[in-house]
Image (tube, rainbow, N blue to C red; front, side):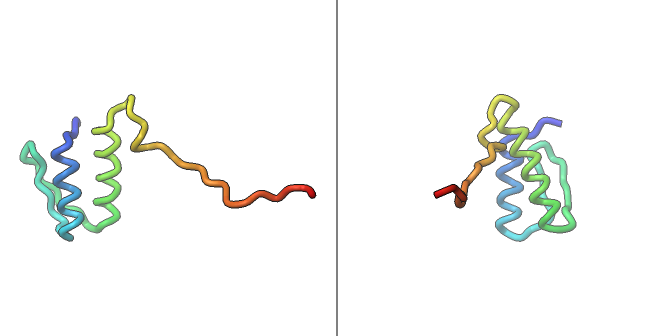
Length: 71
């Protein structure tokens, strides 16, 4: 199933408004049980909208907090 940016925008709006039922651009309607399901769906849609060549949405950052070294 191909998602569009409008699907992501609609889901973001529903999350922000605290609404669990979302109607997508093609007329499909989904009611989520909780916020965790909505966020999982949002991550899936965002990854698909970003496309296979765009890894910016999935990039991980590595932060070094401290190092132990010899004196």
